[in-house]
Amino acid sequence: MPQACRDAIKALWHDNILSDCANASLIRDKCLLVDVGEKQLFPKTKKGLYDAMQHALIRAAGPYDAAFKRYVATLGNSGKTGNFRTRGRLVIGLGSESVLETGITLHHTYGTPVIPGSALKGLASHYCDQVRGVTNPGFKRGEVYHNALFGTDEDSGHIIFHDAWLTPGSLASALPRDIMTPHHGDYYAGKSAAPTDFDDPNPVSFLSINGTFYISVSCDCDVDDENGKNETGKKWEDLAFRILSDALREWGIGGKTSAGYGRMIPAGNFSSGNSAPSSGIIIAGKPISGTSAPNNGPRYRKEDPVTATRIADPKGKSRPYFQADDGICGCVESGDVSSVEIGQRVQLKVVGVMLDGQWKYSFAEPGSRKTPPGNPHERDRVRR
Image (cartoon, rainbow, N blue to C red; front, side, top):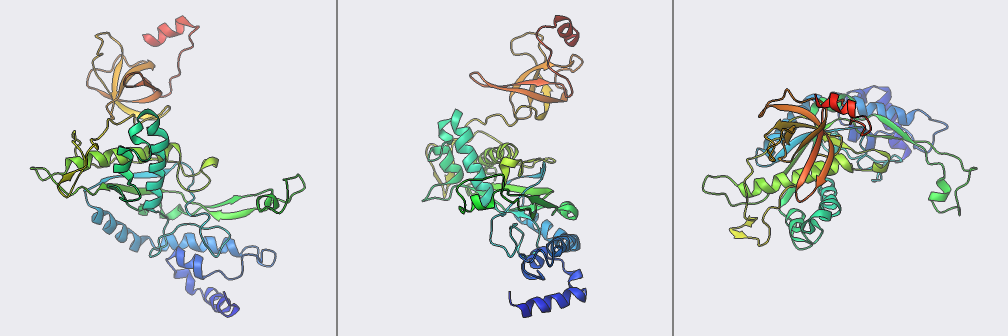
């Protein structure tokens, strides 16, 4: 940026004109006072820019709330939707082109954090191939289910992954400052043969994301049944959404996932159409052969909370047998649920997931611990 532009921007800062700016993306890209390399002369300039970006999010609350409602209304009830919150922090677009040392993906119009639909689709596609494909070859890349969900080089697939918008209630603290400290910069840049203890650490500040995102997927099937509903599309939407949910929870999205960034968990209720067995995806009146919806795997993993309903033991015994809201059943291994009646719903915790001909869970009461096998008296107490 020419110095004349910097001088003009500096005057705007001094006149407090930018104090009313409500677009964090505009501030980041156009309003840096000095070059980021001048850390010794202007050590707090980057911090000031980050603070201005967070304040801009707060000032954008009114217009963004209206835009968010329009976006949700545009998506309508045709897809599977839900809110997901970050378990820690999220980094999207860390390596993208930026006037700063690090990047972050912001909505161009409103300057708010956004997760591109292409990123969600890529994550779900890879997770489907690497995890679902282990137990069902049809989910492997290039196979029938994977192709129907995510497409091929010749076809884009039949599931649309929409951009995930930050919910308006998350704006106040959506851009917390973070820091990473590469210790061996010359080694990473290929300037030295090996890292040593004599290398200088280089702290790099960056913006991360914290909050709740509205996520939606939909199917492009365009043929309804005689009741005016597209039950085929609803079935595939539910499957794609479940794969994406598992991927967000277990793998995370964005950068630095190996360091724990990017994990997201459901926050609130989901909306979807009624699911029903489908014979296949139908596009333009023509069925695509071999794409009948597969049986869904377990939605939950070990240590996940779950709402479960007590049902009769299929073996006719008096075991505490429960069915999770994804249809998969199992026994309660620890905790006292003897007072729970058939048909009553309770909160449990998943302590095991097994595949023995069919998927099964092992449950436990929240806060209970599994009884040590060497203590029969303790087992009797739990059983009572």
